[in-house]
Image 1 (cartoon, chains in turn yellow, red):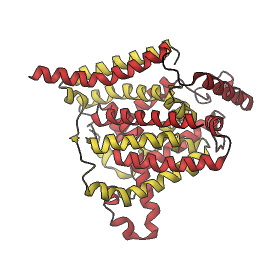
Image 2 (cartoon, helix red, strand yellow):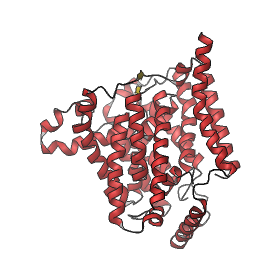
Image 3 (cartoon, chains in turn brown, orange):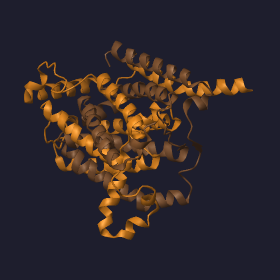
Image 4 (cartoon, one colour):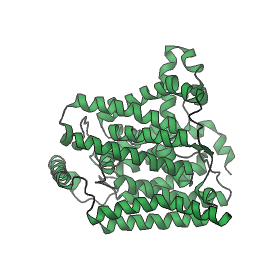
Length: 187
Length: 232
């Protein structure tokens, strides 16, 4: 569906920008573009980040899967491997705690005037991406580290051998339990 | 045999939420208390400081555009709906870190075309403006609009919580943020995605890679943050 729209490059660039505006708006209104929110989450003091993230996941999940059943959208599952997904994300977490922003919220923080996100975060990220492209990626490829423990484009229901709908229901129930827990204990 | 396989996988999968649940239960019961006394003090100082500086931000406002802060559930639901639109209209999940890798290539290009074209990584992600790059540009504008409309826009180099831990030296904060930026993007490109691409888009598609990424970056993030907090 909507292939003509998907293939129109100029309209897609405009759509990217138009979808980005509410994305940044919601992140800023959720106050997750604040260093204090991200660092507060990591020292388990402020659970705003988990609340925003998990609500986005639990709202997004049924919508995308229903549209997929209707034939409106296709999934874009990222392939994973122990050597890339887990090792990379563990490194990411260290950077997240040091920077206090993730790549998306760092850009949002620049928009709200956080100079540490601009001159520290964004500058560091651009430098880091160069280091990755020139120094790390060729070596990681050469040694096959990124494909160690490769499990491909696996989904949780495929992995567990269960129905998609049952898995979505389980995720939503788990989320409800988690949110109730947060609000019950004033976290 | 199939039943055993299913049960063992179920237990394996359930162990993550159970582990998280156990930590929360211990936390709520008061067995784990991450330096609460000091934190309460920090929080109240920050709050009163903010109230002092921005009294208008603490007045009740019913207009969502001028409110400084929404319920995290409302902001999250908005991002969830946005991901529907991104899939439907653009056949693309929300993501950020690839755009930053492309930007690096764009910045390097003037230094020598072959620097960029010969690199395998830039062949995989050519340095050009694409949908995701425009998304990130829009993200910046959207956050700016939100902050300006609510009076939350303020140039600031040292966040309040950092100042409580390490003082008001902008140089120190910028240095650590720069190092953090380098590490965070190396991790994101290594893993093939960040909080948006893996954390939100991957997890909402129920990708194993997305959920593993969330678990891994919270794990190392929490450990590192407690070390930083201990130093401060």
